[in-house]
Length: 331
Image (cartoon, rainbow, N blue to C red; front, top):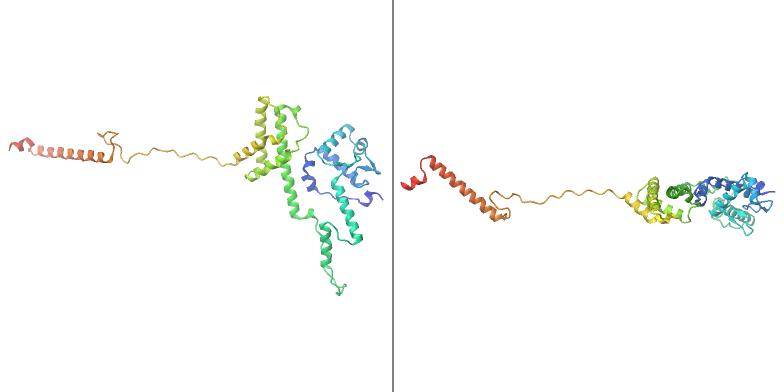
């Protein structure tokens, strides 16, 4: 019996597929080829290896099986291998790490079920514990209806796991947006011929760090990606104008990204209030020197003016009565 007959279906987790950073950075054509290869490896012996009737599949045979030109197939295979999507055995046979791990767990479960030993996986132990917990104790009539043991919930169906996978996929999508903005700015400054065939190994780590920094500053993912794109365009245009070589990875702009995000999240500066010079309660009075404005000097000047005004008023009254001062003295 073939492997396909024994296992007519295989497990596929869309959230894990979208959250895999190595696979997400591959082109759509390369990801489509990988799906075709997974289907072939599901039917192969050993399971998870790219073989037909136990023999390794050559590139020419794979091109025929997938309906691709050999030249195009070679480029897509190189893209997948450089991204680390699949591995090769010692005999250079391509295999899927995830499928081989799942097959080993399945065989271990079958072996444990036949021997009655406790499975090594956490899900298997939990399943047996649930059955033991819900089984009636010795001496109890087994004909009485009892509550069936609950089915262990799949990890991928738990709400908390679904939320974590969705957040991981969203963070990866935003990080790949930063990498794409870097490549677009590089091609715009130095021409399409300078476009990188593949992102640097440290690009994803730097992009995820930039997204986390923006989130910590209260920026949305779109704002963070937009600020990074504007920074890349401005800096790379200036570098190209100076005749400098294009940067090779996002690590080149790591500090500049941090400064740009911090400046964008900082509150706007508050304009200082106008400062007016402090002045005295009363301006210098007429007839008093501006330099001589001490409190005692001003008071003396006011008393002198009041005394002079009173004397003038007295003389006016006496003159109106015909009692001028010279007549008073003569009498």
